[in-house]
Image 1 (tube, rainbow over the protein chains, first blue to last red):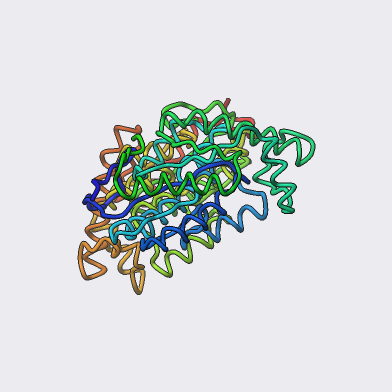
Image 2: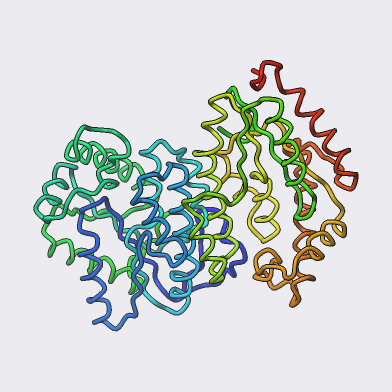
Length: 238
Length: 225
């Protein structure tokens, strides 16, 4: 059982009580392989007998659909976008993550507040404003940051995966370059820099994701096992 | 842009605040008519009006998905869209913007629903500071009478029924409005709200409002620089 710790002010009306579950965050920039790793980690955890809940950005019942619709039109202002994401986050925290943690689940979350903060900050939002809003976030049991060395390496992955460049993942709203390729590289380079900056502040455990998928998966399993079994468990930094 | 700092835009922003039933919307509508008749470019913006957020809010209310935190955050999202779309552009163009409810509504309601005072204020830090924020102050019983007699049934969130303060909607509404009024009262000094005694006649209040607004206007049809 672990005490609940929050980055800032806890959610209104929340009863602070120790919880038996584990909150494990998988962070990393677009195209780094987070979903692949989470799917594999989930199967592995379930085979070990753990109940797993997985969640991720814009999947909330409350705001998920609204955000997706707003992103279609590209009419979403920057402040509005950040607050819409924060609404989505709060809904998932209160209605999915906290109940699952109280019930003893391992909660695997595909991104957490760090991606939201990084995206906002590279778009010029006040970093202190973002941190204050996300003060409602529970400090996770561990944050694994899937780190890739350069944006160029990400581009290669996007192209080889056969999926098209995404408007927002390429930062096209920021007018950084004249085409998707150059915009993507510039945007993701800024994102990587922002993640590196947050790494120390939030106690990320860095996993070199330039390695093969299998090596990353093996490293993740070893580290997650340590968190769950409580060996050498090191809390993410508040 | 912060609520502590005066904006540098050429336009003027007048907002009305107050509990439900205080008569603020009536006063703002009269002010709007007058300013239009005087030839000023006027934009009107009201609470909960972002087209981007509307569907989400409607669904959440219907299905009762809100907690105090998400209620607060989604209203801030709505307000951010209004700010970016309806408030800043006309202010930059030198127009007069009239807002029916502003950040103080969020501060009063969200804190009444248990949100942290500092957290809510921080969230709205991006808001443009109004030229004048009118607070139409009506005693609790007057405001409640106006709402309850004019409406067949109080809505779930409007009555604060999600907070489980009381079983009955009217009783819950009364508790909620009492807390909201207490929050408004403490904001008068904090934010320098201009208090208008809402127990007086509509005409008397409107005369006072126009007198105050006219101090910030110039004669040549645009807002004062």
